[in-house]
Length: 67
Length: 145
Image 1 (cartoon, rainbow over the protein chains, first blue to last red):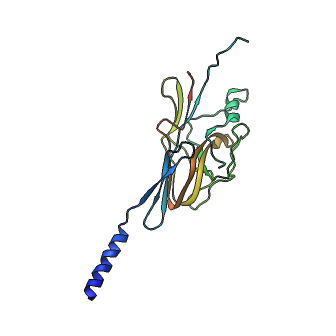
Image 2: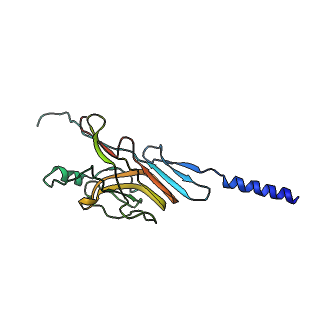
Image 3: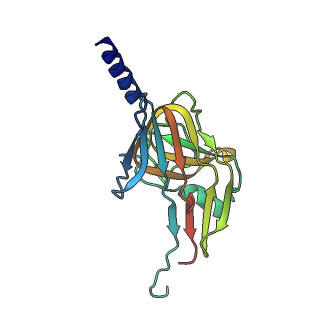
């Protein structure tokens, strides 16, 4: 019986240690689409990855009467 | 959410074009990228110089953030000015929540160039915080509409 208990214990430890990171998408409030990720690791530390959007400015030609 | 919009700071660009002739060199590798919390309120019309108001705080994060290297102003696509940096700023290990980044000219008394809102909170906990610029650049100005 003791041997079986030890084998189960070893198996459990390996399973916890190899738990993959949890990659959570962060939704951009402005677009409703994924803007980046937070990555939770098994030891409770967390990374953050932001994928910035380009600031796009543009000239506008106004059509209208001459001054 | 206070830090909710991205933009260019009007006062800085006005001073580049008017008699102030502010010597904003976007090719310089001294422009800083600082991260901020949601308490940061940007006024693109009246903000002039950067201050560490509502800047994130953590071990391994120094106030003013990181200098952007590999900066360049190019025409891309045709008719459009694109400003970009090959450096994707990264800090590790850090613990904070950031809502946006402000880029400012360290050698021009911290005149502010642009703000990039992230669109929500991003939290690193004893981990790596990475800001990846868009492949289309940090900002573009389409000069030929």
